[in-house]
Image (tube, rainbow, N blue to C red; front, side):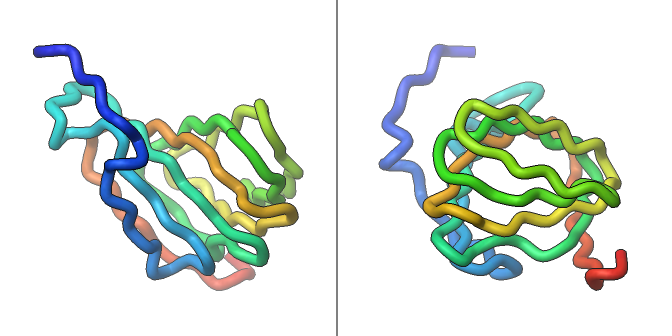
Length: 122
């Protein structure tokens, strides 16, 4: 494995179809030869977010800027810069931007991940 240094701004940004004003960049991942984890940057604009959903892998997140309400299970959390968030695999969660842009890093294991959209009643 060789060291990797690259500009995050040069990584392809992809719109998140299930979200509102939401996009992501895979900063480091399997395509780069990462053996265990992927590092992704998510950006959500003012009024943006993601509806309630589950993933089959855990999420470890670090908020860079903005503020959002994140529902994890049955509890709402307001988060902002320098907050960290852990979402266990399979737990319903959603994002509502309170102050945009809302940007965060999200680390996930390099395992198969299935995203399942839920209705607001979970």
